[in-house]
Image (cartoon, rainbow, N blue to C red; front, side):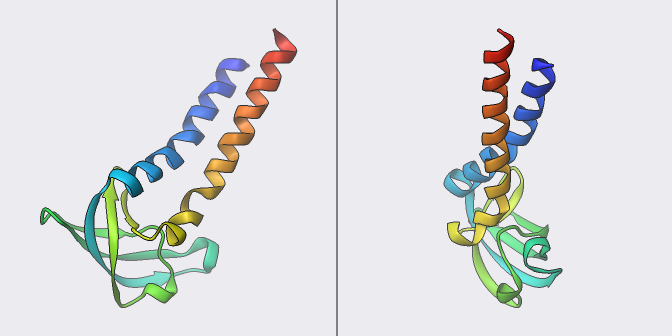
Length: 116
């Protein structure tokens, strides 16, 4: 049971860690947000980007919304792709996994105290 819980914690916890890594250490770039579909919590924005080193990319851009459509924005590109360089805009992309990670960690700690 503890092994399964630990595995879930690791799986849930990697997403916010990679987002934070991208926002802090990701390569800077510029993106053009072409189109956004969906509603606020389920917005899927697509576009193109180019990193400072000249590497092009296309596809999903995280941390942006309908208000960013047809605009050029600053991004950070990391292991999970491009994220808006604005931390406030990118916050919804990883706040729920951070909360889930905290809850799973607390549950694992409580389970460990009860079992052992």
